Length: 227
Image (cartoon, rainbow, N blue to C red):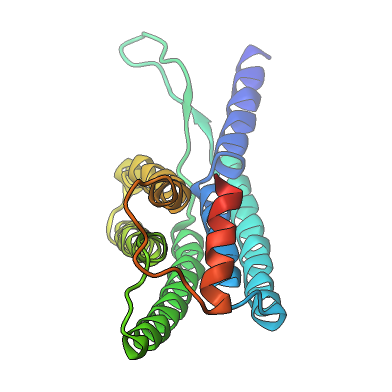
């Protein structure tokens, strides 16, 4: 009876740790922040917001399903560690066959971040060309808006690719080696997306040319809301 209770607690803990503390939750938060930034960049275009929101909802639904399935597989494969040399070992282990599900879960992450990066660079190019024709520069706030988005893309995309490679190439307990790093990556990228704008907005540097286009005006309003 005691052994059954122990394995039940282990199964419950493993299911909760896989489903409710997954890096996928941090990924969703970062993607929502990126969608809000793109909504501001593209003049609050409702059509673009609807398309991006649909992609985010699909990503959330896919992540929920995959994390639930991985949680079930992990819980079912849990087993109590047998005593070694007659000494009991606390806790339990799990060996789920979830390699393919984990790999699939990284595909939307790379796709969405690549899409967000391309959209950001398109708007950056358009804004830069428009300013050059007028003979003025982009303000530090707008530059921070674009640079933080670029930084976020490269950090998240790089870690997602590395994590997917580890999932495929590594077997055994070392397969989750990427977990602490991916959590740090999403936390860093998500926080800097907001803090970089606040730092630029609070800077004492003079703004050489205030944005005149509607898209850049919306960006500054967005940053003031963050502040």
